[in-house]
Image 1 (tube, rainbow, N blue to C red):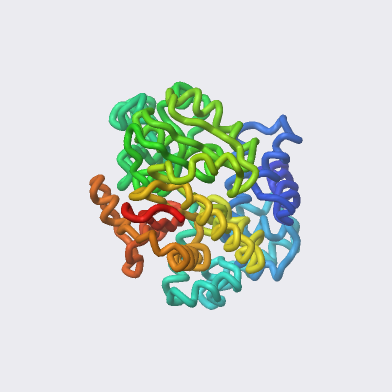
Image 2 (image 1 turned 90 degrees about the vertical axis):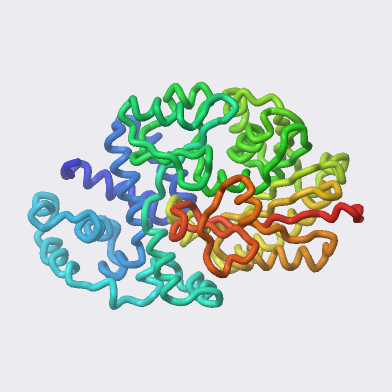
Length: 427
């Protein structure tokens, strides 16, 4: 798309609105577009891609501009990361900007500190250095600087992956099977799917491949009693329901009425009849007590820092902090303990986050096992292999599932599968 002076002004205006990050970037951008209904689809796509690209490269852009104005950040991004040369930019810029832009090309990224090269905040780099080498952190950071692909999940209750692939390809939409999830499809581009017939008829849902794999790790069977403890808008709930062939009973719990309301139209499209959404006030709500000791499988996709989703949500780098991580840890411990009470002897619990940090992952599981010795860890790789899902795991992953954009081209996920002893009743 050619960049006109009007489009540049609009991009700078959008950046001024979003970059202070007084709310999540996608929320601010949605409000920005609502205020400007005259903007066409191409302009919206251009602004979205540019702004998220800037958020992914913001540390280096601030070095290049010496923490300059928003307009300078935009111009630096166009020059350094969009490949626009001075001749292309000349009609859009002022004379003093022309001289300044010619100098930023010579600033080498390789000479910058690790946190600038990796585009990760210093506090996060210091945390990661406890578990990873600087080279691993750099490669991890570079993988988060790439935009995430668009993955969809085929609703196996209504269609087969081969049928959906054929339908997409006949429309000229480049698509291929995801390498690990047996119901996933990866699209080369990012077409608008929410008006597509496959979406409207419930045959597909938008869902990252890593998120899909969590459902296969829980592996619910038809006829079982299953709980999605932090269901949100129900993406994983719908997968679990399909894996159960819509038989048995699947509870979708969440504290947010708004998120559960977002599940309702998806549920209607899905053809599933075994899902029961219920709002709870907190993890120890009385509604949960009647299910104690009765549930076969529980998924706990716990609230977390979300740092494994930086390809999609690069603004999280500035909106999270050490203090917030500590708050998440307390909540994660409480939720995991509450969810564990639901299991019947021999039942399985999958604890998952989309975080990179051991404080939200391995440490939470270790603390839980110390207090709950009646639980044992199952090997995630073996559980997935039983379903013919074989994926490369980092060498230090042990029994856990650790997904990353670097190794798997998915969002960053951690998961642990825990089993309650079949010979010990819950306290």
